[in-house]
Image (cartoon, rainbow, N blue to C red; front, top):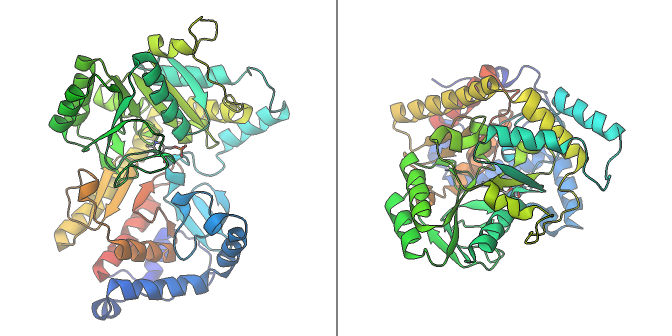
Length: 456
Ligand SMILES: Cc1ncc(COP(=O)(O)O)c(C=O)c1O
């Protein structure tokens, strides 16, 4: 049975504003007579009408930034909403519409918007001054929290983004092994200039890349053995995020550990997204110790952050007192505000209990949507693990980027429908839950997706 819009909106959030919304475009009759491409044109036209201020701000940005954009990930046609405020799990756009935030800043927003503990930590640090040009009193707490949570991380260094962390982990691997090749997996996103979606991005550094298929244990082990003499490292997301929130099979990830150990190649786990899935990331859940681990996103408390760490014999090469020390500078590596915010988050907010609660919400969302799609025979599935969820217009299974259908129009239509219902998430079907979310919002989100699927 179709839920009425009133019920959906009340499930979404009772505080939702009554600002003018776009008209209902997902009526069954309309869906039956009009193809998805035409429906998307209509939905986007309504979106333009409903968001004049976001449009104006986009056009203003475009005068100074290419396409009005400085971060490709957050572009969407015809223009993205400009978000002016965030509070808990709520965000407000420039036209006054409120949304429940299921994007969670692509995992960096795990703590929600303006968590009081984090805000207080930033305020306290700010009061004593920033850009101090020296070690400060916050970085040890953050480093200790990371090394304690991730037993494979004996020593850690900070940087400013996940991209940088991965570049550094790979460059360190190349320096210590004397080999230059890197095995990556198709669909991987290791950063803005470490992109392997449908090929190797022309902006990637010119390392000799070898690209394997994600979740193909045998194929990956074979590639490691065949290329052992050229390979410095294998880098892998234990769950591919950008490719479609695709969990790595434990057997695949174990095969990587075995093959790299046997062949003297370093194994790098990119836990930039997955570190949130337990206190010690996906590696803890799997019982696998990589040689190096990279972190970013929420670990900096919601400020710009990256970190890479691992075995003492590898990371020790950065000890400046060693004659063979590797140099690694970075003005903001120990940024006072980031160190304080990150340490507060890990030591005071992100408990094992909270992680389990959030993973439970994600599991229930995924299970409910999958059961709904199966019961009705709809070509749709939800992927992921715990608090990370992917939405796809296929029955699945989704095991690598080749299994992810483009379905651009349906993705666009679902996204606009969800915005209309007061929910924001990544248009490509990306959901990262944040701590302020509860069962109520999950139920509202699921009901809104189900309403759309009933129309399709
Ligand atoms: C798995 C993974 N690695 C690395 C990165 C890059 O992190 P950053 O955006 O901080 O450079 C991302 C960003 O989404 C990511 O998902």
